[in-house]
Amino acid sequence: MLTLLGQWLSIAAYEKRLWDIDNFLVNKINGKNDVDFENSPFIVVYLCYNMFVTMALTFSVYSRYETWLKYKKSLGKFDQSDTLYNTGYYKEMMPEILLILLSPYPFLNRIKYTEVISDWDNFEIVYEINDVLLLFSFIRVYIIVRYILFNTGFLDGRSQRICK
Image (cartoon, rainbow, N blue to C red; front, side, top):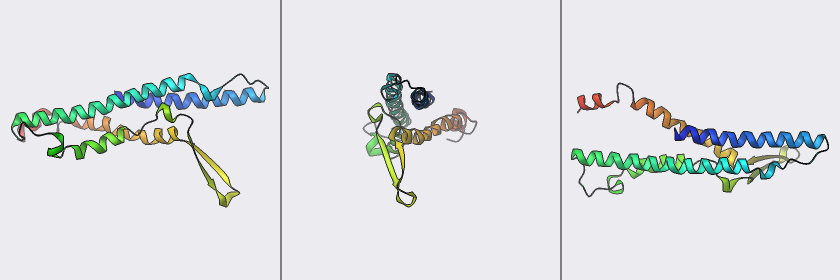
């Protein structure tokens, strides 16, 4: 649920920014200059909520690995003094957390990356950093796919008990 909420908030911030740019251009054509799309408070609020959701999702991944380790300790597969580090589970956890952290952030709002193509008369392509991070944040969909797979007949609790 946190994955979808973070994605929706990021997309809402992106769409709000595009909507404000559209209104700014229409008003500029009509001779009005009353829209300030660069300082929209809604975009910052959306991105702050998204940052909170990202941190909560990161904590939930850490908690999942910690719970898995406690489960393995209760089965007697690990010693009570084992940690995520000395069992090697951190090697699986860190890439997952890094993928989750690829998300738009409010402190990166309005920071742009410009690329100049000299072959086309110095044509400039401007990307906002948050737009690029929004694209990469769609990798989070793997969490939903993983949840669906864990609830199939092959990975449920009963099959785990039978395969022991």
